[in-house]
Image 1 (cartoon, one colour):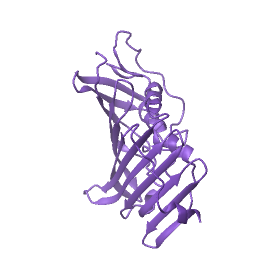
Image 2 (cartoon, helix red, strand yellow):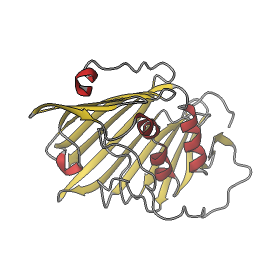
Image 3 (tube, helix red, strand yellow):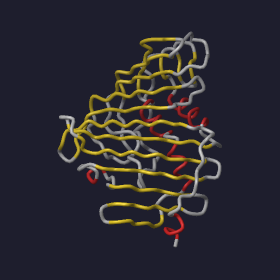
Image 4 (cartoon, helix red, strand yellow):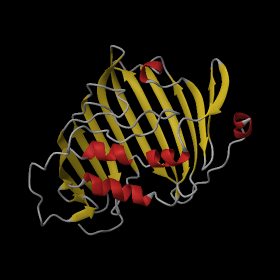
Length: 273
């Protein structure tokens, strides 16, 4: 494949024992060790004639999840960007059980982070997500949070630093966890739209927060540029929460790279008082 300006759609069928990133909000800080055990050796030897499409990706699929995740993280280093994330949890009949919408504006150089999250639905507490609207603001010297719930407005010091939020924002750990154990193959290749890659096997995957256990029927779709940047990905799977069978869908998109302004919100002065 020629290394032209293309986006690669990766559709991965996986069997997960846990979920992707933790839900957005004050507790949404990615930790290391999201996967258990050492990454397994590939079941088939790499084809030396396979063409490179992106770091860690060839025309035969993802061959080095760490190389791809590293390239993605490097694309977001020393710059500004916005991460938009939506997580929906629905009962099997389609009724909404929980929805969380968030955006995170990041200045990776300062560091400086402003996050806004809205959570609603009857299963929010069961998923360790606080219903209502919340915001986080952090820089090199302060980390503050503000919640607006049915009980009123609360504010105080944040639990995580801006530097930790910047690391979480790249979703490096989640990308590695999703791809490191998968055996992928290219199903279709379009020079204009990129390649479609699927996986029908993935070893044990455990969410760092342990919120979703016994996940089944999982699918993951990613777009990857030739440089290894992942503009977006979506994870969907079935699981059980509070004794209820549900379908979880999480979509993450990275936008405005190099063109995001991280402004100090007006409530920061009151929260710091």
